[in-house]
Image (cartoon, rainbow over all chains, first blue to last red; front, side):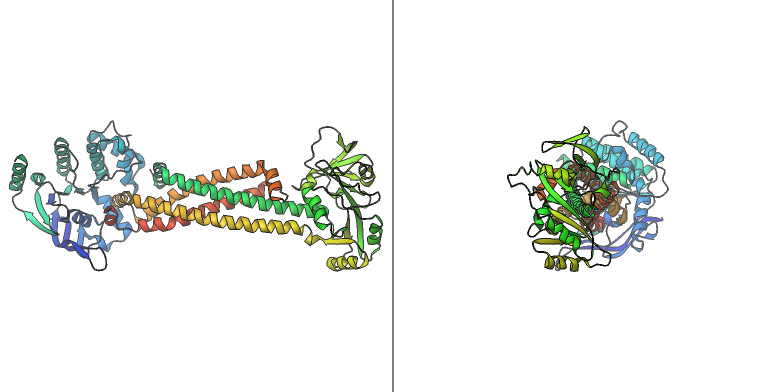
Length: 242
Length: 383
């Protein structure tokens, strides 16, 4: 299968000071095909977010290559890399990432500012449609502080989809959500995936691997494929029941 | 939404930052404009005063230079005089083209300038209306002297108003001009400051024009050697005391302005540094959504310039209005005359003040804005 995201022997080390170097990702290989729904689980500090940032070209790897749709991200200049991110990648973050000074609608429209050849009216129409689809038709003019955590996450997803990206990178999309909202959120990601969007999601929640077409576990910067996601999910559920 | 729209929303969203930057720029632009207006106003007034005198030399009694200059510039009461025969002696010196005596008297707040219309070459050229023949009992008013009727009452006399001079911003605007016969009548009543009345036939100063080609400084030296008890002040050195005072004031203003400028720039830089640090995640999110480094840089700088422009305009308007409304108090406080500049001159000063404020904001914000725009997005997210 053709790889949409390809990480080839990618390493990333953080230099805390002249003497101390922390390896976050070590010699990692990952190929994600078009239409895949890949979930990477792991504990805090295992390197999941670094992996996602590497895939989005938000951080330069210490070694190896990151390819999106066959293009080596770090062979591009800043404006080409930014445009590629804008057109091909949707991003949801673990932390609250909506602009506090903008309404829900304006937050969703925001990524259309950075692309080329997009009509303003069309962008607002699309944003409104997306928000309605997310069940936020009546919250378009609300500011982030006026939205619940779940509503904010949905606005973030709408923002990630406004440019109709090929890839959705999602960092802990269900953190800080109650069980019911978590299920709604995963249902939403599944719906997005069903439209043909390739999803790479990182989470610490083992139960969520049931939603993935492929799942990996990350530990100390190393990636290991989970061959039996259903078992991992069931075990996690049992642990929670106990 | 575009870059400016986003910047505007962020300006409104960061109230503390906006308020601090706004106040710094407002103060800076306001102080710069008000001090520049005062200095320029004083310079203009001095220049107009010199033009008004129109003489190469102002001859005054020896030791009375500052007193006469104060009278002419600030309207300070004066009762200096020199004997009338000195005028004839000055007139008889070789190289002299014209001589016109003047007598300065004070009545209340009004400076009375007695002059000889026949020999005068300094006052009548500045008259608004043609009124060359000023007779006894007639008066020409300075630009700032109020009178609603056709007569002007002073020192127990009711004088017929014959004309009005253009404004200088100096004390001459509040002076009235009469011929020497009228002044002779008035000298019996004034001065009101308790000093002895000026003797008949005496003058306070003599305005002198030298013949073309004559060196003014050599003529001044020659006068001092030939005639005892006089002090000729050369036109370029006239109001030297005021110029010195103005220079002192100018340096004082420049020093204060420099301190305020540095403090404002540091404060703006620190506030921007603080705010950009607080907003590192927001900036990283924008980068993740596809914003280029250049966009982030321009957007943050636009925030600075929007704030700077608004604050500078308000500061400039307040400063201009303040100086205009309180020019009298400013002038008397700092002890130099003041003339509000013309509209064209004011417009250029406003433009310079605005540009100065905007350059300051841009320079102060540049380093923190540049630094944060160069951050790797993932690093910026890891707060």
